[in-house]
Length: 194
Image (cartoon, rainbow, N blue to C red; front, top):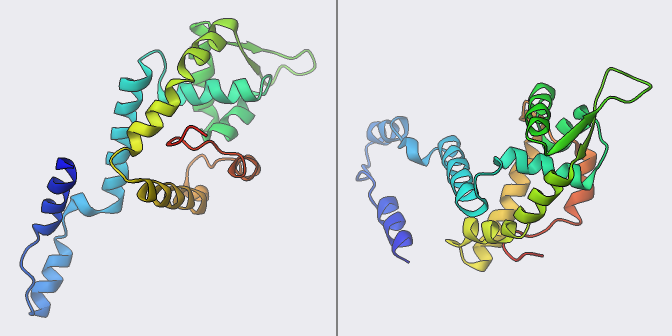
């Protein structure tokens, strides 16, 4: 693969190693920002979003797609529960619900017993859009992982899940633990479509 060779060349282009301890310390202080984990994760997110749009289209954002998926699987949940299941803060989930309702993709209903929260349901238009998008999720998963061989894909996904799971509480909107435990045993593999 030409991309892999370019990447390997870049990895090989390191400043010459000196036996001098000061030079080694200087190398560590001026490490390439492109090799820092935070930068790499940010770039991976940029790439994933770009591939999402080029594969799935521009009808919804990646977060809106997640909201539609959660509402399909959990019809009638309230906005706070939606936020927990999508790993969003409650104000972001509420804003997303308002926007998706404005586009006719979901209904926000106020239950008779309490005016303090809203229950959410996909509209027929929202369900139709989601049904149109769902087949592309496998193609997106394959595209995201295509640069890796099958073994690397398994390792990458395992480590990515581990990283996200172990750092869940560091997020400003942690994913609800109970939901993640039940999904881990039934999760679809984006690379294989199973």
